[in-house]
Image 1 (tube, rainbow, N blue to C red):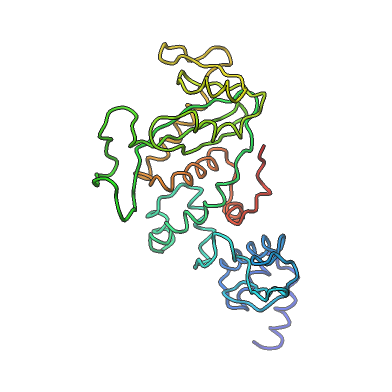
Image 2 (cartoon, rainbow, N blue to C red; image 1 turned 60 degrees about the horizontal axis):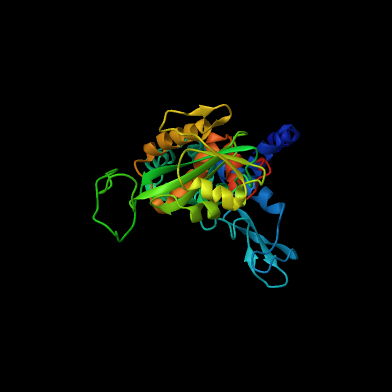
Length: 323
């Protein structure tokens, strides 16, 4: 480039936006613009709570760059780390695709569809799915208030992906060997108050028990809450022992609504959850909590952008309001 061209080029620098300047710096450092946007977001999240993951000391200094990320050295213990150390995204590659993959999660893309869109192997998108959801799905309501509805949903237990099955293999989907609710079904307990705050728990195999209600519902119920359920026999003794008010609707007798006493909201959530799970053609039981958290994120529209989801993956939830 000639000197006159360089001077003309330099005079345009003040006109660049912040994103354009970051992209330019990334190109000078040999980083793709897409990766630069991810690196800038990761560094910004890490800068807010920078400390050594080994000894938790904040006494550290910069220690060069590696894989596009700033490295730090802890002064007391001498360990080196970067913005991803100790997070679910540690040791993952292809950072330039992370925002695009977060967009796939918000669109509920399957493993194969996301792999096709990004041009990576399906094993990569499967690994990313559960790394991205491991922390993002933990930010849930702390307590349910007012009128809270509770009901259980049963899905067929699945050992999808397991190396050693405890039963004979069956075709995709399949049916339980016994009629009704049995030990081949996973119980999903959903509790939802009238403000839309929702909590879902995988209680275990078979019918719901009182001990499971104490373990799951008791810590998240306000003392003044009114618990509304259907006619399952396990709810009244649980409510008496927990010291909370309880009302039941007799759905079998055709009585679905008694004024404000009904379970229509939680049943509607069940319907959306069941329909959404069908697109994955069977969910492994061990990953079911991740899918429940994923569905809650989408249903409540708590995270609406890939950048917000990537921040939540690192445990940064400033945009979320939880009770």
